[in-house]
Image 1 (cartoon, rainbow, N blue to C red):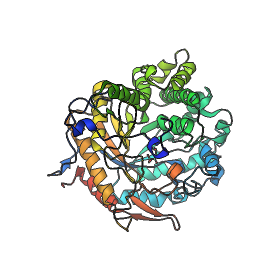
Image 2 (image 1 turned 135 degrees about the vertical axis):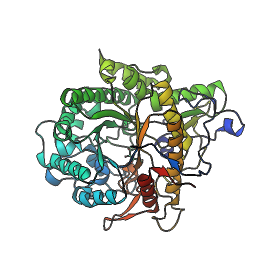
Image 3 (image 1 turned 60 degrees about the vertical axis):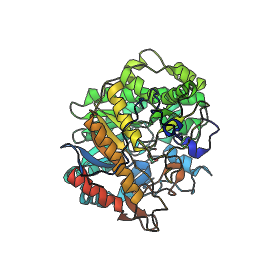
Length: 487
Ligand code: GCO
C-alpha cells in the first residue's frame, strides 16, 4: 500500500476493530474471520492444555540471519550481501556477514536445542553455499555443512525441516534478472535437486520458498528488502515466478524422492473489515487477495483469485507472466502447508489500516492470537483442511519488560496465547501438527539489522555468547510436557 510509513508496510496491519467495539460480530471477509467472533484466547487457562501425541515442538531460523561465515568454504555472494552494502538499507548499518556465527557454532547450538527438549528444527539452506554462482558446479564444502548439521540434529533426536529458499538468492542469478526472469523457476528446481539428493535420505520435511509475499512486496514494491526494487509490475511478475518455482521444485522432489514430504511456507494474515460497511468488506477482500489468496489459491486450487481486487499493475504483471500450463505446475500436490503467522490486517472502507491490538516492538506487528485461530480454521474450511505445520510465530523483545532482556515475559505471554489458539483450532478440526517458535536465537532481522531481538535465546553480538531467556525455559517445559501450563 504505497504511501504508508514503512513500519505499517512491513506486513500492513491495522485496526481498531470498530465493529467489535460496537458489539457487531466480527464482519466476514474472505479471510474467513466469519461473522461469529472467534472465542477469545486471552482468557486465563486452567488446567494445562494437553497437545496430541506426536505434536512437533520446534524452533525456526534462516541461513542468512544466523550463519555468518559469508565467504567461508566457497560460499558465493547473495543479494543480501549486496543489499546490506547499499548505504541506508539496514537500520543499524549491519549485515549477516557474521550474524550468530552459527556456521562455526552449530554443534553448541544443537546442544542448546537438545537441552531445551526441542523436537524439531526448521533451518534454511543457503543457495549460495551450495551453488555459489546459483547454477553450475556444486560447492561440496558448502553442502557438507548441511550434511553435518542434519546428522547432528538426528543424533540429538531433533527432526530437521529444511527450507530451500529463505531470501538469499545468489547474486549471479540476480545479475541475470533474478526472480523477474522466468528461467528462475528452472534455476530453483535445478538447485533444489542438489539438497534433495544429498539430504533426502534424512530430511523428512522440506519447505520450498519462505514467504513469496514478503519477497515480492518488500523486495520489489517497497524496496525495503533485497533486491531493493520499487516496481509494482515487476512485483506481479515475481509473484508468479515464485509460485511457479515452488511448483517446479515440488515436481523435482517427486522425481527424485520416494520418501519425505514437501510444502510451501506462506506468511498468512487474516483480513478483517474495520466496520460493517460494504466499502470496508470490499477493502478487506482486496487485502485478503494481496495477503493470502494470491498464494493459497494457485498453490492449492490451481487458479489465481479475482485479480481485479489486486493493484492493477501487480495484476498485469501476474497475467503477463502466466503462460500455458503454469497453473497446473504451480498446483503440484503438496504434503503439508507451512504457515508463518505474525499479525492480522484490518482495513476500513477507505483502505486505511488501524491499530486494534497492542503493537510489538517490531512496530508493524499487532499481537492478536485469535488471528492464528482464524487462519487455521479458514484453511480447514476453504482449502480442504491440509495438514498445517506452523513454521514461524514469534515476537521481538519488549524493552518495557525489564532492563534484563532475558526476562522476556511479553514473549512468554505471546507464545502461550498463540498456542491456546492453536489448541482450540486443533480441537475444532484443524490438522495442525506442529509449532515452530521464531526464533531460536536473536539474529539479523533484515532491514532492522540487530535492533530487534526475536530469539528465545539471547545472543551477545560482541561475544556471540548465547543466554537462554525466560521464554526458552517456559517453551522447554511446554515441549517436554506436550502441554501449555495452566495460567
Ligand atoms: C519473516 C521471515 C523471518 C523474520 C521474522 C521476523 O517472516 O519475515 O521468515 O526471517 O525474521 O518473521 O520478522
